[in-house]
Length: 356
Image (cartoon, rainbow, N blue to C red):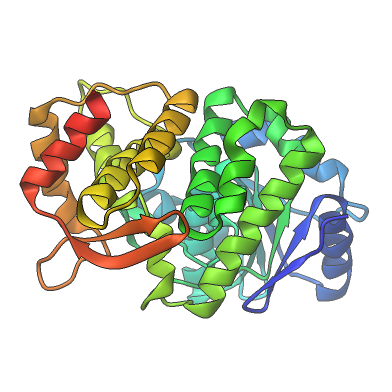
């Protein structure tokens, strides 16, 4: 059995232990109303599994939102707030967010703000949300195409990670989560990075252990720096460029929208190149990083004109200060350096490195 993890007072439980804890909690709390937030995918594929694990089934209401990053907007929150209100939600209500990062980020923000805050808990159903959105208390929505511009940091009352939900995921969604796991290795633990090299040879039990390790890594970082004043910034490795790429592809009618992990993989290849140019990150490891990501993720076509637009979007990155775009780069694997500024010429060169 995987040990539960305490994340600043929020317990993260795994697999069968999750439902033991949830059932005990529901029996003792006596909530006035229970709402379950889903999207159309988790409504069909995950909700039946979840309901089958509850021993006592109190009355609940299902609230469904449309799937996809494009719906992670304040307008969606308004609709959910209205539904909760119309269904008689009060301060003694519970909101259960059952879904990927869009559902848990948006649902967390709804729960944190409805009547100035009701209890909410997260059940991440994608690999990405299990290893990334599960700890740290970040909630929020996008502002147009700009990622996570509005939100608050607040912990759910608990997080339940059940890897059975991964069986409902398409391969590209699994790869999207793998990008964040690879990031945890690069910024924090070279041994873990090596363990992730041959994912296709791993058993489900191995994957459970690796997911647990990723949650432990992220939790160690966010526990030390809950408000992202210092160390927590290392979790943004690959995200300064990656988020800008993701936003650009989200708003461009000519481009196919990228999954978060697909965009972050591009960002990590390019930012590892920047690390090699500015911080002497070893060239052999740079090639290893590029080869590893390209073994999982198809190369995406990005032109120099695209890159100009992507660079403009980077000015909205939340790590920026005093007009400077601040990068997290690597001196070596597991040796990150904060607040590195990069000139535009070098950014263009990082794109050339990715393309070639």
